[in-house]
Image (cartoon, rainbow, N blue to C red; front, side):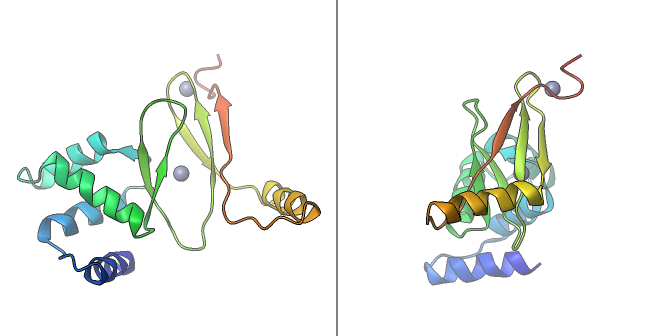
Length: 141
Ligand SMILES: [Zn+2]
Ligand SMILES: [Zn+2]
């Protein structure tokens, strides 16, 4: 897995060691494309290795964010969620305020319009985040 290598590289640059535990956590995290909070990832990790503690999971996620391999997300509630950053990929989110469902979408037109707005204002966009809040198909009924 290439991103696991990237993470190892980051750790060694910082003088940190890649432990078996960290490796397991990172592998699980990169495999999941959901928007997990620490608790949820911890439960997944515990199933494959009950020895791994909550704080190890937490710290590993923080390291992944610093290494630019994970993005931290806040979707209106107090929860902090994490998702893997895939290179050359970008998506935005629809968030159901009733059941918490998170739907990812990509829309070329919206992306282009944003570029256009920035250009018109002589603005250089580094990153952006678009979140639409409302009711999903199940909840709006
Ligand atoms: Zn819903
Ligand atoms: Zn996402």
